[in-house]
Image 1 (tube, rainbow, N blue to C red):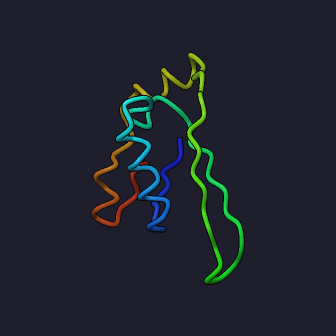
Image 2: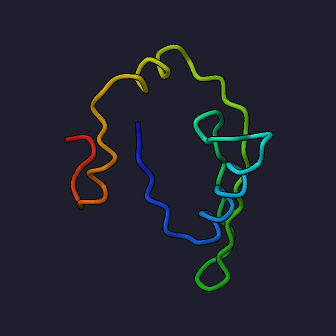
Length: 80
């Protein structure tokens, strides 16, 4: 499992828009394909939802305790 701390406003807005769409809903139900083009001030991001069939192993891992996302807000390691 990985935690991605998104800081790019355009990516945040795109994820919020997709998550608000009744056809997609919460991002736990699909993967997001994020690509970057350009450099510096010309950098642009695209966010595309893609279907994801989670393996049984991944589904089981997601249910296990051990990741404390609240720790991110305190500057601590969520996997500690």
